[in-house]
Length: 308
Image (cartoon, rainbow, N blue to C red; front, side, top):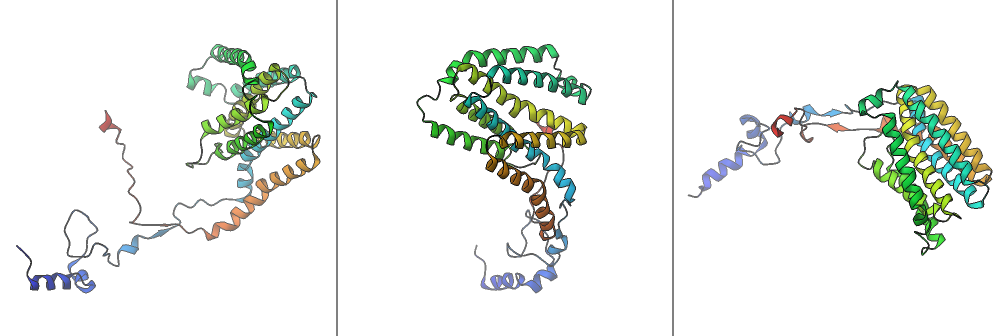
């Protein structure tokens, strides 16, 4: 049966704001109400909240947190400097392998000393298991180093350099600096760094150089960030001091190759450490986030029992 003309007029009158206020609007979807779909009353904006989740930063706190970014930038610089010395024949692969092995042993001991072995007990890892994993990795890398050496022979050197630069930039972009963001991917970041190291190592003179360079890349792009994360969690002052020493070492190493490059790196580190935090603090008063009944629903209850 159709609706009469009089009923249509009554429904239209009911949709007016005056009639809506008289009847009373409820913010529900499971009831048929005599209001338009886009109708809200004046109480709707009473639940408006601004900047309830905004985090206030202090300048020196942000400067301290920027040490993670400084470390990764310096890691890329150190890797590039070591590769250049290896390519020029100024650094023997035996010396680099010995220094890397000694530093790895020191870092391994320090990794346990910092938290008194708590991380090892949580992961149920033994020193014997770590030793076996290291030996297997070294054996496979050494065995496949001739393959890695000839892997990119058909690719021009300029293309190798361009790919390496892009991969290292991607490593810096996707690295886990501690921020909860969708772009963060530790696996992708590490894979891009290893890919760049393989590309550059394939341009070195011998297979031994390739083996040592790839091993060094694993140490500086995988093991070194893990140690620094542990230092930051347990001894922040030590973490900051190590970052300063590491940045000075990277700058001095680059200075021996290019003065202009060292100057650009110093300006970049100063910008990341001091100028960018200053701008972040200055822009904080302009942050304006609104929250209200239009936000997406968040389920706070543990629903895992329904999956059993």
